[in-house]
Length: 391
Image 1: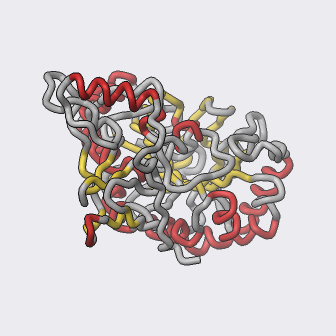
Image 2 (image 1 turned 180 degrees about the vertical axis):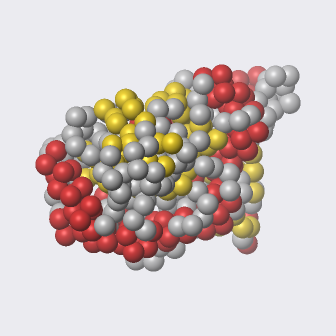
């Protein structure tokens, strides 16, 4: 199947039932003399004092005939007719101009340990000011954040308050976070907001990291690597069938995305959620590890994490810890130097070990960091370089 197959998920047709939220919104707009339109937040009187600004035009798209547009933010390349939205549900064509419906509207904000992302070679023990909007450009049947990722913006309750990138940067700095993390849903779908927040954060002394599925087009990805410090990519599996049947996505564009990140000036870590019977076979783990070693090198940290039943896939039991241990052993045998296990506190594979002298340079338990023995990017015991972003 071509990765350029078009996906269009439109709004309700004319005459369809109107939700209570939309009815109240339209009624309020009418009472205020505002223009009633079909999209989210169009009901706000944009010129009213103190009102949120109008929705933001999207980037990375082209205008087509008959007021259609072709989105270029991810490999789906959705062709979107006037009045409809792309697959992600958060980018809408209005009269031949494509708009982001989530710019300035973070639907979830938390301060997390950076180890929760997980990023193990980036500012260990620091905090990450974590934020998300609605929407995603794939649909994983096991998604743990499906309430955000598979929702339309108007489905989020309570409705998020408008927050400028400068306000995000200021809040991150006040929280004591070392980075802003774009996470929980797929940051690619709120690219414009993410990029502006990253710029504002850097100006305020707070760097940015991205937790992503890697399903992004080359041009926006190239720009993004100049704005953020690190990316963690979820590699869902190493078979096209898994991506197609379990994630409604495609493997090859993700592999191309990972290769573009090689030497791209941004730190990279990879996470693989091991799901029993679907992507945890020794053969698949070996092929995946071999590809990572050859295409990305031995120093990209690889995390094998434990699956727990979520969303539409509650019939498969959690991953046995023995499966995590086996996968880690295979990847180490293949030559990957930093291999971790996750979602299983107390299991082996939590600590960072110097490849040269085998000394433990970062000791962890779950999301807690108990000890760091890295001095100016080198092992505190033998002086060998330990790749990462240590600050």
